[in-house]
Structure formats: C-alpha cells, structure tokens
Length: 417
Ligand SMILES: NC(=O)c1ccc[n+]([C@@H]2O[C@H](COP(=O)([O-])OP(=O)(O)OC[C@H]3O[C@@H](n4cnc5c(N)ncnc54)[C@H](OP(=O)(O)O)[C@@H]3O)[C@@H](O)[C@H]2O)c1
Image 1 (cartoon, rainbow, N blue to C red):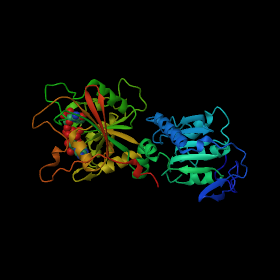
Image 2: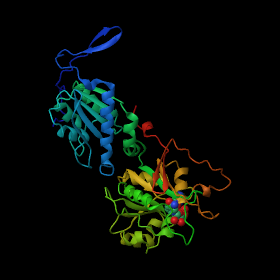
Image 3: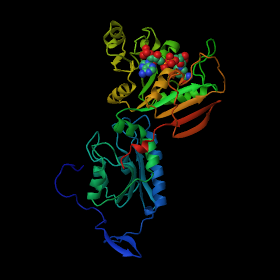
Image 4: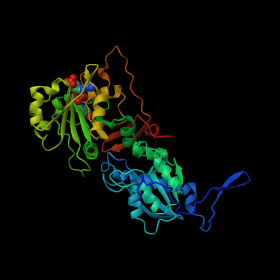
C-alpha cells in the first residue's frame, strides 16, 4: 500500500491526461489525448444510476454488522459490464471498495467505481481505499456522499483527482443517505440514531388493561421487534416499564447480528434488584442510567456487584437529560438505539426532538379507559400538545397489525454539500 504521507507528486496511472476542452455548438467536450479506448457505455447517466442503486442495496447488507462504521456498498463496472461488487460486511473487515476490487472477475483497470460514500484516505483499521483504487488503475469514481468524518471530508476525492481519476459526487445522494443515516447522525450530531418503537390500540392506548394478555401487538410484529433488537446497539426503556412488565429486552428466535445492551432510564433508582434485567446482567450488558447522586448510593453499588453498569447522567428540568444521555451512549460507541417506551419516556423523547424514526405497530383492538396511557397525554393542560409531524410515512401489514414507519429527521440534511 502507498504511504499516504509520502512526499512527491502522485503519478498519473491512466489515460485521463489533461482536460483539453474543445467547444462545439456551445458544448464542452473533454478530449482524451490517448483516445484509443472504446467509448464506455458506463458513462451514461442511466447506467450510473443503476449501478449506484445496486451499490446502495449492497450497503444495506452491513446493517448491524459494521457499526460504528458506515454501511457502504460498491460496484465496479467497465463498458456496461459489472466486474465486481461488494460491501463493508463487518466492523474491522475490508471496506466496500476493497471487497469489490477483490471480487472483480477481470482486471478493473480503466473501470468506473460506484460507491455510496467517499473512499477513505486515512489509515484506520484498514489501509486507505483511495490507494487501492489508484493502484488498481480505476479511471472514474462516482460517489453518492462526501464523508463528514474530519479524517476524510473531501481528502479522499482530492487524492483521487490528484491521481488523475475523474470524480463525480452526489449521484443518488438521498438513497445513500438513508443507509448512512446512523453514521451521519453519530458523526455530525454526536448522538446515536434513535428509533422509537411502540404498539398501540386503535384508540391510541399503549397499555393493555389489567387481567388481559400483556401484548398489544401480534406475534408477527413481536418477531419484527426481535429482529430489530438483534441489530441495534441498545434497547432502552424507562423505569416504569421495568416496574410494570419486568422485561428481558433481548432478541430471541432470530439471527443475532449484534447483542444490544439493555438500558433503563431510572432517575430515582427504583429498579428492583430482583428483576430479570438485573438477574441476567452478567450475561447481557445492562446499564442503569441515574442521577450522579444516586449513582454512588449503596443500592447502586449492589447493582454494580450484580453486573449492572450504573451510568450517571445530569438532570434537565428535574428529569434525566435525554440529550446528555444519548451523547454519552454515542461516546460509548453506540450508533443505533431502539427506545421501547413506555409512554412517559417516548413523549419526553419526542419533546426533546430526539426521535429520528418511529415504528408504530397499530393493533386492531380497542382498549379504552381514561387511565390507560397514550402518547403525549402527560403534557398536562397548561401546555397545549404540539405533536411532532413526520416528514415521511410508510405503512405495511405486520400480521393483523399495521406497521407505520415514520421518519422525523432527514439524513440528507446532515450530509456535507
Ligand atoms: N405499548 C407499548 O409499546 C409499551 C412499551 C413499553 C411500555 N408499555 C407500558 O407502559 C407502561 C409504563 O409506562 P411508563 O410511562 O411508566 O413507562 P416508561 O416511560 O418506560 O418509564 C417512565 C419513567 O422513566 C423514568 N425516566 C427517566 N428519565 C426520564 C426522562 N428524561 N423522561 C421521562 N421519563 C424518564 C421516569 O422515572 P424517574 O422519574 O424515576 O426517572 C419515568 O417515570 C407499562 O404498563 C408498560 O406495559 C407499553
């Protein structure tokens, strides 16, 4: 691998010599001096878009396996033919560009690389991808998004251009940003990507009446939740849910991509020392977030001896500061967190503007009753509720339930221009 710090000019490796521009009928035409190569079909916008679309789909394969790294996909094509493709498949493993180069069925010399994020130019867990692309004789790089990571931030594109590689940036930026949302959120906002999830009845209630089955959502929906738990860094609830349900919050009966930490927000440290979360804390990482004062009480020390991590968090308006808590989780390497309620915590999260995405399982049942909680009902009468409005909504069937996926933030806004 080339030493990125090595002095001297980067050699020209391919036929993109100087941009000798001829003007005909007002159009700018770039003329290659060694114009012996056949015109490549992969210069067409349509082909570029199809290849980038393929790269975006490949990127998604890394969900739950690559974080805190970004999910990235890459396709290498020449003259209308795909030579190789790949994705960043696991944390610490080869980046998408290197995976795609390794998968090439023919020499990639003179090919175009389609990649969803700017190739890296620095030594991280792996050597810089730009060096691999330059060494492979790549002629053109089409990238969807510039990397906001200060260690890259345009330097990758700069190195490629210096080496005479043509670089196009911004193709299918929206689509790529959707897969990069957790990475963009953690890099730019210094907090994890936050998914709020709850189940509710047709009359908006989140709690089943006493004596009825505990679950509001159907089995298919619950399985969906287990799949989600199996790819996030943490599952978060408030102390009210632990007191009411004594949940395990683990992913069961599904393929585990990563083991989520279980986190309880518990300002008064009222968690039972005999609850399931504490009883299994030695097996599955369990954090209790509480005030700095309560974090040094004898109860906190007993919890620590039982394997629980007690994380102090400052207060804001007499409650644990959710933004401070999320920032601390990002510092601990968390990229995606799933907040599973209940209604008090979910409402507070919305109030703090900390919901990127909500997954709402609407169950075909009524629960009724003035005391059964719904979202936003705790806001009181003095302050009129201003429920948040989603910027995008998708719906689909989930067994007998309807699953609403509501997005409240746009990752495109975080991506560098
Ligand atoms: N339908 C669903 O999807 C679903 C999901 C989960 C739970 N539930 C149901 O919801 C019920 C429990 O409701 P809940 O509202 O009490 O549960 P919760 O939201 O899980 O817990 C609320 C508690 O979290 C603590 N908390 C810590 N920091 C907070 C903050 N910044 N903002 C708000 N709360 C914070 C507060 O206690 P401290 O003041 O002591 O810190 C608060 O009382 C149960 O019946 C459960 O079955 C339903």
